[in-house]
Length: 336
Image 1 (cartoon, helix red, strand yellow):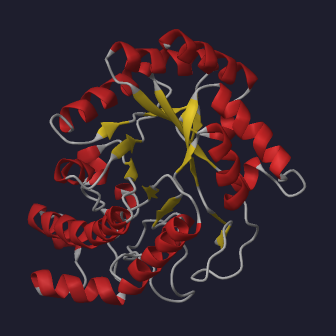
Image 2: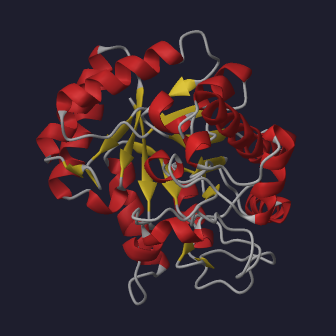
């Protein structure tokens, strides 16, 4: 099975434990366990961990030695770019999702610093960062994460009312800010989803062109709930897959409930039937949804293998312990 893993290099290699030898030891363990793709977040706390003109001086350059060491073992590195907090906004004051304030409805703090694709300056910045990554480092490809609007649980009741979204909304239905009646209207919900889909899709297609020019793959961490979340947030990843935009897709299907995980995989397999894309279901060793034991993680991987799915992406590298790596190595050895 082709196993990928999402990584957080800034915490996997804290200062003082970030030498080439430290990186070689950790990535070597992952590779020996059969992990062939390392998909790292390359910004941390708004600062890059790679050399970038677009983002300014890096916190540290961890990406360089990671790619060098990975190359020694045949492991591919696909750095992560995207919206949300993945790539900083072009400005400290503008370019972010501005939620519609509604009396009596509280907003989570994270929702106020989400880079908004309605601002072309954000799209330009993400594209510039992506070109720097691919041109300056021997990356295996690019991986998109948070290429969408904020979570639908917030977005549905608090649509963006930044200056750019107001202008786009005014073009769509002649009103910059929806009222209570609008928020309850299926027609308005459709127009809102269509508007977001167009803005988010522009980012994804720009990144596709950047990768295609360099003959490198583009992939995506996709929202697990396709209709309830992905489509409403502007991330119509099933359509992107059928259009040929993505080389592989990693739906974030991780869930400690085995039945729930199965239902996700069944739905995603159905959505992608006939699409020219490889499916890497997300397996969550440790996530906001809960924690799997090493044995439960293997149960999910075994289920995928038994279904004929030959790839998976684990969230996340930092959660993998010696027992996980031992079981992964045995699992992959059995496939050989």
